[in-house]
Length: 175
Image 1 (tube, one colour):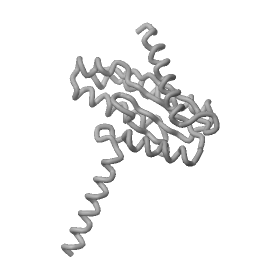
Image 2 (spheres, rainbow, N blue to C red):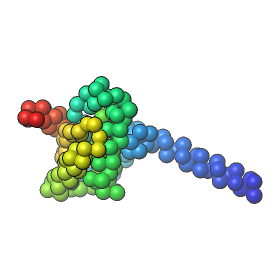
Image 3 (tube, rainbow, N blue to C red):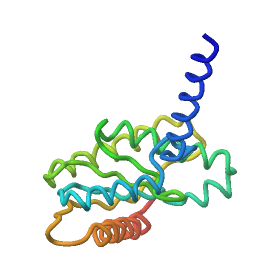
């Protein structure tokens, strides 16, 4: 009985360690390493998909004004909003710092726009709830990937540029 229990604990420990290598400890989303591995797999399969690049606007201000614990909370809340906005089969990753990436099997631009609209609605609802001492504002770049027109790396750069275009647009909007 003791040896069986010891082996069970060891297996559970290995499973936890392996899972921690794939996920971001703060948000629970996949980490950048797992994202890169996922993209490598997609590249080999030559499949079409959709990508969404997301950045928290003025995140530095949240950290500087309210503290890093509140900044961590903003990252955690953003991850929850992403999970609530996208499907269980979608790949959600913390890309780095305050940036996130979603890869989804959507292949229709109208459906992708609908999903991004759900994300924007969920952010608005979060902000209207007043539960936190900050408001989340996201810059979002998204598009469909066609395996025949560009490399995956070019696509990631493309949606990153679209995100920065949205960030520039957001900065020029009245508050």
